[in-house]
Amino acid sequence: MFEKLGKNPEFQKVYKRGRSKANKYLVMYVLTGESGPSRYGFSVSKKVGNSVVRHRVTRLLRESVRKNDAFVREGSRIVIVARSQVKDKKFEDVDGAVIHLLKLHGILKM
Image 1 (cartoon, rainbow, N blue to C red):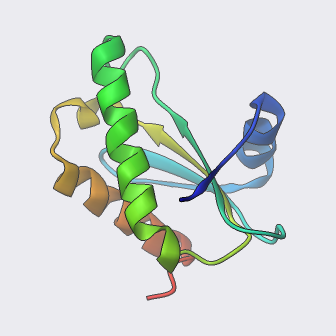
Image 2: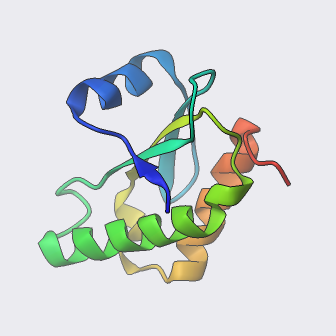
């Protein structure tokens, strides 16, 4: 199981000091150089949809991270922000978008 980022100050630290890369469905902020296991945070705003849609997107992101966490370098702090285009997508599309951004950031061990 992956570890989650805690409260708002941890998210703000990643937003301010981390690098961001984006694709059609997601924006990913990454802060490297921390100690310990990689930690993840998810942000799905009301622009994406109602609470049912937002929760579904969050579950898809969480599952993708759970599946790929073993391939991510230790000590990364990652915040994944969903864009509105992701709301109708299947797991394969979301998972592909997460892997794409991990590769762009260069923190994938594969």
